[in-house]
Image (cartoon, rainbow, N blue to C red; front, top):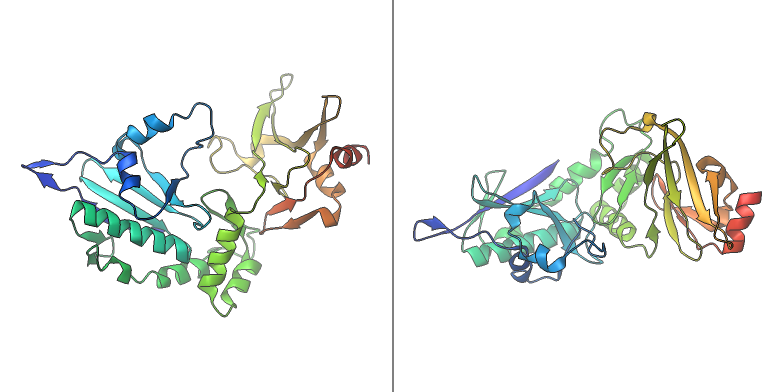
Length: 300
């Protein structure tokens, strides 16, 4: 679920203007925008090349503001309709909406074009801030999880840096707050910007049997976010399901350089209760472990 807004690419001398480059999309903003579609720390990522490409080269870009965004917003360009589109997810945070509407105002002002919402409403750069997004937030929060909720353990909303898993208990707590929209926004934002490493899920294949195994790596002296019960994450091979994984493993390095592998369930069962806490319905934040503490977990 989402709400989209569209701005026509203007014409000059009977021809449409060139599509804005990524850099131009950032430069027109009155806010310190960041992109969350690509890892800029990846050694293969070329920032200058990325910034020079037209927006139309991408299906969409996930944008937001560091330390403020929860889910961000998508920016795209449709060459067939010659329209820029800003898409906001349902539900998004108060800050996400404020950032997206301000970007729409900035973009419309540069292009000197009106803004059309998928609802049929039309706005200008000066009136877009009057769009009432709160009913969409309320609806989205109320409908999460939205079917067979008594059987759903958690429902994941994808944020700018990591997913957030909600369940009926968390949803009901949000809705019972004096300000449910602020409570939801705070939860989404705070989880995105926890000062901790989100352990990366990896999938491998056993050379002898061909069975698929899932694993995570844990480093000492580093607060880490891990799933309490692992499952295939969004963004992995869409042809792989949870039923395809024969086992889950956690790996960490020893002082001598060797690796210790523990069945994931065994690792979780050995965790001291005071060393972790749930941040949502599915993920836990581990305090930093020393090498000695990790070694102790391996021999218990």
